[in-house]
Length: 144
Image (cartoon, rainbow, N blue to C red; front, side):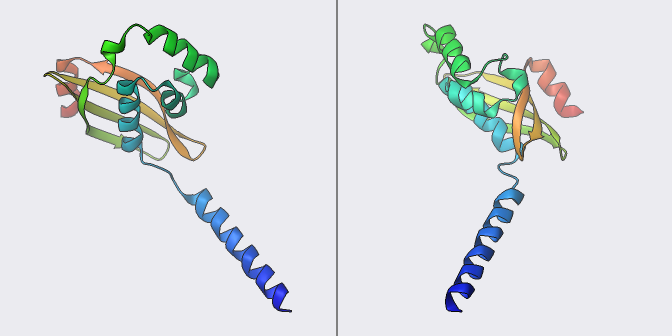
C-alpha cells in the first residue's frame, strides 16, 4: 500500500514537472536578440545556429553552418569582440512575432543600430531576419 502511494506521488511529480517545462515560454524576445548580437560579437557560430531560424541557416545543418562560418571568418579576427555594450532600444513583441531594435556601442567609439525580426517557434524565440540600420533608419524607426 505504501509503495503504491509513493508511486502515485512520484508519478504526480513527474507529470507536474513535464507540464511546468512545457508551459515555460523560455527567454523573452529581447533577451534572445541581445544573445544573438553577443554571439555575432564573439563569432560564436554554434550559438548563432541555435538562436537562428531556418531562414538564417543558409539551408545547412549545424556542423556545415559552423564550418562554413568559421572558414569565412578565419582571417577576420579583427571583427571579434568589438561590442562594448549591447542594449535594446525598442521592442515590439506579439505572441508569435517580434521586432527588436538594438544599439551596439563599439569599443573605441561608434554605435551600430540593428533590427532583428524574431518568430516564436517550438516554444522559443528564434531570429529570422537581421538588418543593419543606418543612423537615419534608427532615428526614424524609434519615432514610429
